[in-house]
Length: 159
Image 1: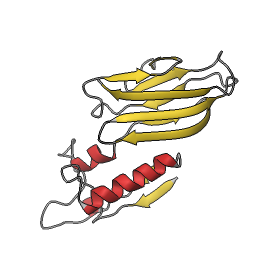
Image 2: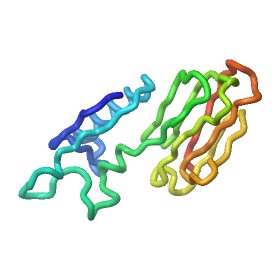
Image 3: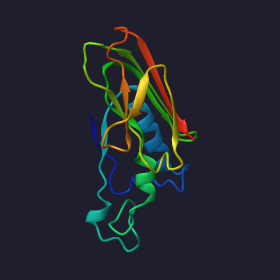
């Protein structure tokens, strides 16, 4: 797990996607996805009393720019061996590739942030899928009963 990157002066801002912090964040998150690496961001801004608004989220800013830039779809559980996970920030397309392990009697679960797909989404895959029961922002992809080791691709895009 990649931890404690970021800090008081490294809060990305979705309103300024070409800003240094935003570009660095995008690069780091793309690299983490390419390595199937989990991560957590460390932001110290709320601990300090800046003379002007500090970067990052505050209690009165539930839709702040930093959260928007960092919130991405990801696979929470994979019933097999992952081979690729990628999210394109511009097109909002998410791709997960994995080799199915049919001895795992559980679904592959993919979290879809609601503000990323606020107009709905389209799932393209050759296997069965659906919204996970009781969890509106997570889709369940079913591979048990199929061919062990089968290459599975799941693509999620905006409607």
